[in-house]
Length: 343
Image (cartoon, rainbow, N blue to C red; front, side, top):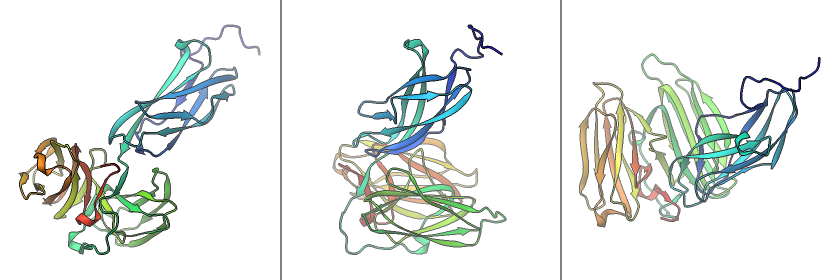
């Protein structure tokens, strides 16, 4: 057969960029790679020019300036996304542009959502002794949660994870250890009523992340490392099961306030929150149900740039987070706290 001089396609372009709509998680100042596929559904070989853009200071760089897309096939290319070191935690969009012709109206734009985490360092770099939490002081995690641990180059990251049964549920727990640029380092699974030890020698200094997903079961997680925090952001809330905990977190200099958000597990699953400033002032207290609304917490001028505390007492399931001008990383002791690099 012969290809006609005029070809009618089902779309207004002879190809498509195929990419995940799920937000990519990145860390300020660290490169993060992702992959995009070109789906060429035309009978012609195409050469696509590639480019990228993002918010001010971001670098969005395809691995090559052009990509050859053979007819009626898929081909992939990589993109490096590097936020600036001083970028703030939040949700962002970056763009990757391709074009098979010389006109602007023939370009294809892929909009990639990015969840950005702060670049974290220990509040206190060197501590000889620190208070290790007792079993009842550790968080019992349900559904999923994320932990941040700062490790020096060559330091062992040592973690114990237990999959604890909840009523009749027998879900297998999964976990992932992510490197300082959110790259996958190790992963595994733990059957119900069993435990596992995770050990990894840090190849580079930085903040590493542990994702734990017990689903309908629950998890107990213990770190031997000092500089450790539970992530409690809007994108990654801390999800507790029957855990009464007290945690420490940092409010940066210049903050005039932040917000507490929470969502309970049902009408009978209430929770009590108490947030205390470094002066001893109770800045927030509530006891009841929570539907995901974010509640204001005021910061006085002499309370910013210091460590605060939060006490959480749920009846059963509670997911909560801190938002606004606050570091949403919760530690069992002030000596373990993580803060944003540069604060």
